[in-house]
Length: 431
Image (cartoon, rainbow, N blue to C red; front, top):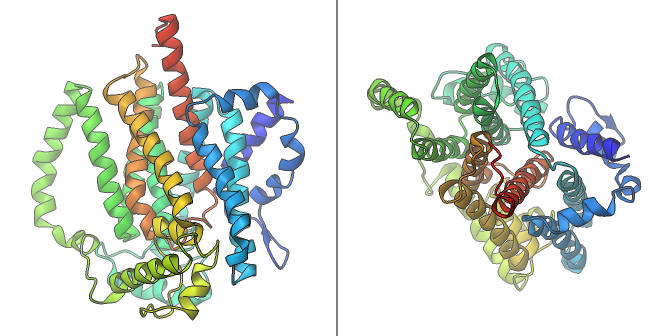
């Protein structure tokens, strides 16, 4: 039974990336995707999880993240008395509950480095397949999974606003910012696998995949994605150089010598991705969304307006003009305004502790396993970049793959912490 449950957890992780566009059954109120269909069996399988699995997770280093999810689900149900739009609350609450289920199963059954590496290999493969769809969209303008209302813009006008002269790819992720967030995680997976794979061919393929994903990230024209990519690159470069790799340092110096003049000379390719103007346009709207959100939060006595209800208040009670845009378009504000300051602080504490754990492991307590260290570098870089890249998405809560992805990182931190304790007490070298 344990093997079946392990495969079930891996299935949840993989299927969460498919969304509802590729394969789904329209049941009217909901789209039944393979991921959601698999979740139907979770209540039955929950009771099959062994006591040892549950106890191991309870004693794990990142158990607080799993407790956060339980607290979030319970608090959101208790906050029901403040909800104005019950239909939207049900929809958003279901997303959070499914995130809870997949998070716990991944926590129980992703317990070895092999589990983590297999998950990263799937992400890399899936990213390449979706990347081929992105190239098809760029070349033909045929967006297979885009709503008809947006087709005209992305087929024709997106070339005009793109600083690289290509159509903006979206694939199955609804909008460019959501795709950019996925690409950041795909870059995380491939950059880790460059040092994890054992064959030169495998490393070359992962290197090529990383460069492919970087190109697609630029093509999305997502400012949040581009800035997140810059942060990711800086963190990776810092720790790679910190490891004293002479070959890497020479490679970086060559890159600087060759590409810095080109970057300076061709700043028109990326300048628009770094510019902000809060006096007009989308930046003005985003600022007003934040102002309205803070007003709603204060009006709710800092308890939150309830899941899915920001849009209701943005339409009915806004003080600042946001036009037709009702989604918060900022993950941190979305969590704060919908779920209140208590849940927000809990999340920030858990998130910060995860960053600190990875940083201290890398900078002060580096293991003797270089493969484990380089996965740590990629995950730390992703968490830091996520601070910015998550701001671009209209709503993180509806992105189903983000919760299994975060659970994967937390599971890896547990593995690193457990191996560190074991090595400390038993004086065993895991190289």
